[in-house]
Image (cartoon, rainbow, N blue to C red; front, side, top):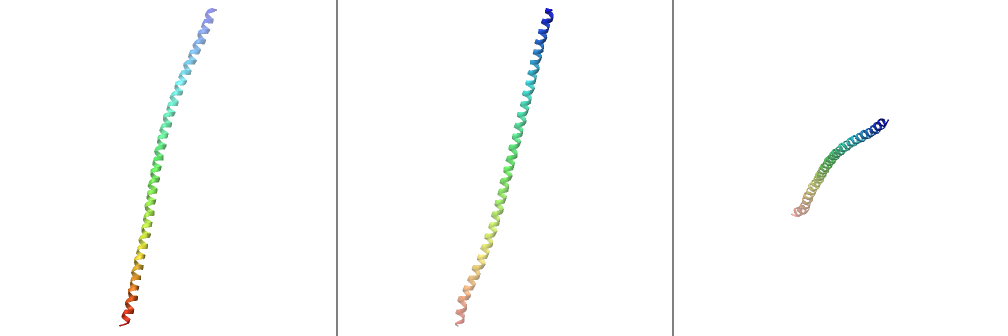
Length: 108
């Protein structure tokens, strides 16, 4: 009968050892899984940062293109105003010279 008791105790101890071993294996697998998740999260963060950087660069290029287009429009408007101003100045000078020369010619 003592053999049975000892073998039952040994069996329980063996079962406890197997349970502890299984728990250790499960913890090791959990650690590996957590490590893999951390690596994946790091890769995802890197990709997101790269996408944000690309988006920012694209937005800066769009802003620069819009600024260049605005500057071109303003330059065209300014050129048109200057051309009109030149035309008006020439017309005024011609009218002024005619206005002063014609009466002078009429007196002859």
